[in-house]
Amino acid sequence: MKTTDKQGCNALVEILAKQGVKRVVLSPGSRNAPLLMAFSRSESIESYVVVDERTAAFMALGMSQRSGEPVALVCTSGTALLNYAPAVAEAYYQHIPLIVVSGDRPIEWIDQDDGQTLRQYGALSHVVKRSYDLRAEWTLATDGWYFNRCVNDALLTALSGEKGPVHINLSITEPLTGETDCPPRPERLVTRIPAARVPDEESMSLLSDEFMSARKVLVVAAFMQPDEALARALSQLARLPQVVVLTETLANVRGEGFIPTIDRVYSVLDKSEWPEFAPDLLITLGGSLVSRMIKAFLRQHKPRAHWRISQGDRVVDTMQALTRQIETAPAPFIEALARRVSAVGSDYSARWHDKERLATRLHDDYIASIGWCDLKAFSMILPAIPAGTALQLSNGTTVRYAQLFDCPQTSRNDCNRGVCGIDGSTSTAAGASCVDEAMTLFITGDMSFSYDANGLSSSYLSPRFKVIVMCNGGGGIFRFIKPTAGLPELERCFEVHRDIPVEKYADLFGLRYFEIHDEASAAEVLPRFFAESEQPAILAVHTPNVYNAEVLRGYFRRARS
Image 1 (cartoon, rainbow, N blue to C red):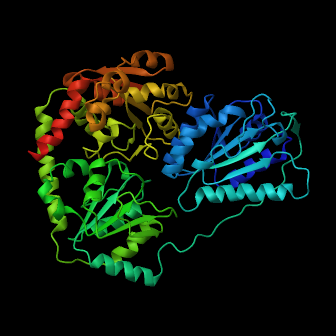
Image 2 (tube, one colour):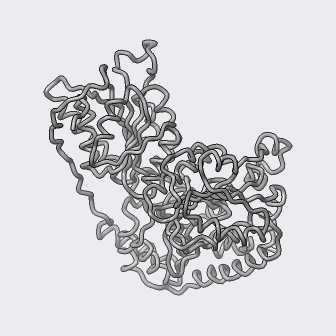
Image 3 (cartoon, helix red, strand yellow):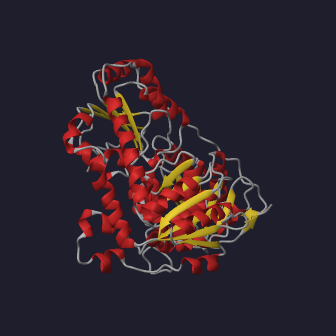
């Protein structure tokens, strides 16, 4: 098969394939034409073509998020690269290995008023682990060696420690679409042998002693990839009377003895009880927390010691109490720790689980007492999700409502919590659905949905992809959170009331449309929505925005009354 005559483009594709890249999302362009040729003719890497670079980047994010594998992105020169920025920033803080490849003009034409030129190298430097500036054409004897070394370094960087995106900027000279019959030269693969997965004996002894000195140990797990080994290890710790394991909806670790509804349980703690529920030792895992309540609680009632378990080398002191940054993979470390520690006299776990039972009873009573609203809708939607479904959530109130419910039948739960933006949520979910044979359900607010409606334009949507849009007038979170709830500009500047035409979007992009307005229609429509198997489906859930906020505030007030 003929291939592009640009050596660097062929070498790039071969090295990426050898390093485990199986998918690439391509966006059309002229300057990146040799890259499009090389990737689309590859038998090792599956290509997806998405015109809008912002949508393309979020789709790649979803693919990598769901598969756990690196995914490449290819765009042309100019502002195309800048449209990748929101998704790349999310990937950086979510530790997702995107391989960003941008075609570029030769360096001598930058800042020379030539079309589609800007300073591309370093444009994403603050949200990638490393940037590389390479040439697609090789003239010197060492050019091929240098190119191979840099691309191998890029992949190893993306996949080591805390994973994350890298940027390869590739300058390409004209002519752009030349072909050659010459087979590409075989490219050398560089692999990395990781360091020890757990701390040394001396360190483990020190940490075990510190653990055993605490009568109240709180483990808090935030967003992570699913990890069965970690779940098993945490289950071992959770059996100890001095240990409590709190897991957020997005933590993707489940086990006996865990408390998976942080906000629900925390809401029933009286202020007078806070000191006795505050930990001596706090152990945190995963990324940023959704729960503002638990963050505020731990910042106010600081633990004597705080361990952060992470493979990253950045100091992250969310609770302003960090004492140990333990740079290791969480699962083997917790496994090793669980083997070395034992029970001490403590009722810490019992106290938390007593509160969990109280919170569950109050939760159920409150749900039964309220009328139709977002909270009532979530109480019906989440239990109806078919077993094995992968759940994607948008930011705002959507992910926070999910925090109040246990949904054990889903295979995993994801949300763009790296930087917590509402942009790109639909595209991320669409990308995730491309690499999963199971159903992907995306639940979003109407503002977030309208922001990324272009995510539905993908030609890769399948009947396994389903969307629920909470049509509550937009910006519902601003009516609930204290900084904005009382502002006179609330409705004009924050909620921005709009009736999102979900049905018209469904017609435009070829999705089967459903809608519900109350409990009766929810009970009738939800089974049909989840059973739809001929085309992707979208469900509009209409709720009253003012009452929604009243109910949610009442939920937390009632719990403490």
